[in-house]
Amino acid sequence: MHAYRSHNCAGLTKANVGDTVRLSGWVHRVRDHGGVLFIDLRDHFGITQVLADGDSPVFAELEKVRSEWCIRIDGTVKARDPELVNPNIPTGEIEVYIRDLEVLGAADELPLPVFGEQDYPEETRLKYRYLDLRRETLQNNMVLRSNVVASMRKRMWDKGFNEFQTPIITASSPEGARDFLVPSRLHPGKFYALPQAPQQFKQLIMVSGFDKYFQIAPCFRDEDPRADRSPTDFYQLDMEMSFVTQQDVFDTIAPVLAGVFEEFGGGRKVDAPQDWPQISYRDAALWYGTDKPDLRNPIKMQIVSDHFRGSGFAIFANLLEQDGTEIRAIPAPKGGSRKFCDRMNKFAQGEGLPGMGYIFWREGADGMEAAGPLAKNIGPERTEAIRQQLGLEVGDAAFFLGGKPKSFESVAGRARTVIGEELGLTDKDRFAFAWIVDFPIYEKDEESGAIDFEHNPFSMPQGGMAALEGDPLDVLGFQYDLACNGYELVSGAIRNHKPEIMYKAFEIAGYGADEVNSRFGGMVNAFKYGAPPHGGCAAGIDRIVMLLADEANIREVIMFPMNQRAEDLMMNAPSEPTNEQLRELGLRVIPQD
Image (cartoon, rainbow, N blue to C red; front, side, top):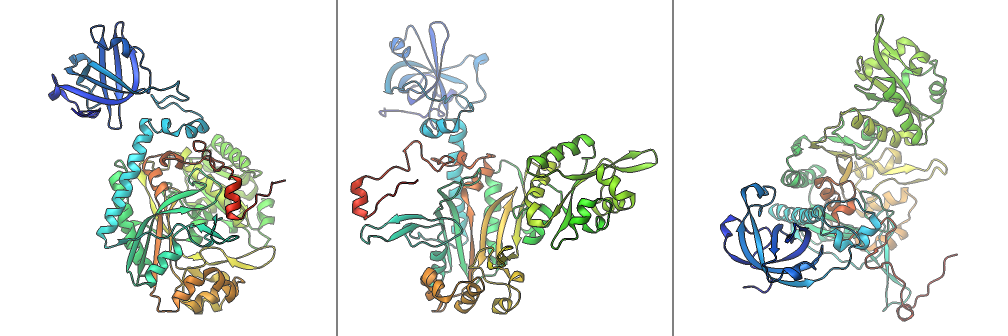
C-alpha cells in the first residue's frame, strides 16, 4: 500500500465496503458521540467520514486530534445505515472504521476557522492565507481559475495562435500607471522596470514576422487598489495579430471569451458574440455614465436640456446658460413613489451632491399627473414632453442631473446602477457584453488649454495622417474595450505602425521627436523596417474569474493577494533591504519626513 493513501477523500463508494484503505488529509471537524469519535477527513478532493470507538487500538491517540491536524488513517470501509446516508457528498454512503493512525502534522490553535465560511477580518485572512485557502469556496475559486486558463490556452491554440513569453525585466515604458523599478547591480544608478504589459514586445513580435501571438502574461503596475484591481500584479490573456482590422480582432477574441463564459458560467445566459453591441465611447458616457456599462440593466439616460431652458426651475435654467452644460434624465420604470424618490435623493447627497431632481407620475383625479418639486416648477406641458421622450407611464419616475457632463457623469452612472438593482430591473442571471469603440485620442486641459492624450497614444487614428490635420479633439482612435456586467474585461487597439503618423500624433500632444525616440526608440526604429498593420487586445484573467465565481472582490480569486496597502502580510513584503544589498546596488535610502 502507498505510504500515504490508497484513495483520496472523495474516492470511496459503496463498492468499496469491506476494503482495507488508507487515507490522508486534514481533520475538518471532530464529533464525540459518547465513546464514538467521528471525524470528517478532508483533502483537496472531498470529505470522508471516519470513526473509531473504544475497541479501536488507536482510540486514545485519536482523542488528542484537533481541527486541521494533518493525519493518515488505515481502516475498513463500512456501509452507513440507510437513515445516516449523506446524499450531499460522493462518499455519503460509507464511512471508514479506523484501525491505525499517524499524525503527519499537528496544528496549533487556529487563528481563523477553516470549517464553514465565516466572515473573518481580511488582514487575518491574508496573513494566514494558507489556512484561508483550505476553505471550500477558495479551493473552488482557485481550481476554477486554473481551468479557465487551461480553456483559454486551448481555444487560442485551436485558432492558430502561438504562445510566446516576453521579458519580465525590461525598460520603463509608461502604460498609464507607475512602474515597479528594479535597480541594476551591473549598471549602478540605472534601473530596469517590471512590464506594465507586454505591449511593445508583442508589437515587435508582429514586426518580426510572426502572425498570431498570445500569452498568459503577468503584468506589474504600482496602482492604488480597488475591489476589481490588484495593487501590484495581475494576469491577462494577451494577444496580437498581423494584417487585421478592428472587426477581425473582435471576431477572433469574442468566441474565445463567450466559450469560456458558457463553459464556466454555471448556466447563466451568454449572448452570442455576433449580438454584442458596438457602442461609441461618447454614447456609452451619455447613456450609461461609464465606458464599462452593465447592459443587464435596461435603463438608458437621455439629454433633456431643451425641456428646462427658460423654465421655472431656475437652477437648471440658469445652468444651461453656461457653455458646455446639459441636463440628463435617468428613467426609473416602476420607481414612481415619493418614498423611492426620497431614497435616491439621499443617495445623491451621499455622493456629494445637493440632491437629485425628480418627477414621478401617478393617477390623479383627472387621470395621469406628474408629481414632485420639479413638476411644480416647470409645469404640465414640459413634464408631459419629458414623459413622452423617456417613454414613461403611471408608476414610473425620472431623475435629473445637470452641469458639465464630466462633473456628474460618474454619479449618474452609479445612480443608474442603484435604480436598476433596487427596482429589480437588472437581470442577474446573465453575462451581458458590449464593445466600446471610437475612443477619442486627445483631451484638452480645461485650466491650461493644453492638448494631451486621453487614451492609448499608440492607437492608429481613424483616418490616419489626414485625421491629425484637423481639430485634435475630433480625432478618434481604433481603440476598443469589452465591457461585461459593469467591468472592463478587455482593452485593445489597432496599432499606429507608421513612424510618420506616430511622430505627428505625439507632436500634437507636445512630445517632440527626440522624446519619442528616447522613450520608445526600440519600437519606433523597428517600424522603419517594414512593419505590418497589426492589432490585438488583452483580457483580464483575474476579473474574468471574479465574474465567473460571482465574487465582489478580486482578492477572492488570486492565490496570494496583497492587502489594500499593497502589503504581503504573510511574507512581510515589502521589506527593508540590508546594508550589504544597498551597497552592492549603489543605493541609499533617504528617510521620509
